[in-house]
Amino acid sequence: MSDDLILQAFDLKKHFPTGASKLLQRPTQVVQAVDGVSLSLRRGTTLAIVGESGCGKSTLARLLARLIEPTSGSVVLNGVNISTASSKELLKMRREIQVVFQDPYACLNPRHSIGQSIGTPIRIQKTMSRSEERHRVFELMELVGLSHEHYNRFPHEFSGGQRQRAGIARALALQPKVIVADEPVSALDVSIQAQILNLLEKLQSDLGLSYVFIAHDLSVVRHIADEVAVMYLGKIVEIGSPDAVYGAPAHPYTKALMSAVPVPNPQAGAKRKRIILTGDVPSPVNPPSGCRFRTRCAKVQDICAVDEPLLIDRGQGHPVACHFPD
Image (cartoon, rainbow, N blue to C red; front, side):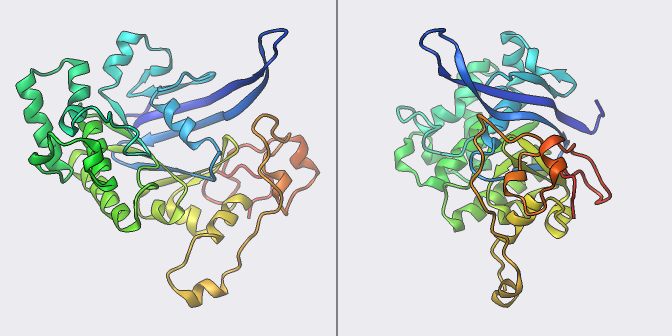
């Protein structure tokens, strides 16, 4: 593992058994939520993972933080394979990687004050005394823009933006190196989204954090990401810098996504051609053979049903999983 790389995933898969047979008492179907994802995150940078709802983004986020067990594949954090780590090793690993969740209300215990919630990781890890913990919580609250007087208030007394700031403070409690942010602004108003994004950028600059940023809003991702990975039905179909993916998308699915991003200039937006995908998203229980996007692709040919395209650079300057990229 290169010294520049802090987090890597190798052929990561997560299959959820479903439809158990009453007679055999074993699953008759498997949902292929994540199916063979490999990626890497460089220190101090942001890797954004985008795609439609149901493509496996949140499942991938939980796999990277080992909140759920992978079916196969591995995740390497700072040179250590955390996919096979024991419970004791996993407890230490939690200090290195933390998660900011999508719903800032559901992830906070309604019976605990904000101060208690932010200090929970410290108490679990037993790294400080109670007085040191309280002082650390005050530091974290200041860091994310919360007042000391908020310490004894409960989650229902806060706005959505304030609750998300508390969630970010809790994620920072153990001074992690990697933050996995699972759609951290999608449940917030647009004006509050900008505040939280600015906060995350400032924290990254000040603390040297590395982010895995999950999102479905491509206009948000463009301004914060150093690298963008596009997911479709459990697989990454294109990955590259924001300029490459946004400026010259090569995969038909990426082109369709980009065509739906609102443009601030109405005249420019009127001239742009919108790509409308036909058909429904296939079921992850029974995905299409070969290329998973072929059932909705206008460029489909016979080879697309037979051979699954590899995620490689075919002359575009960045990897694309398509037999006939632009």
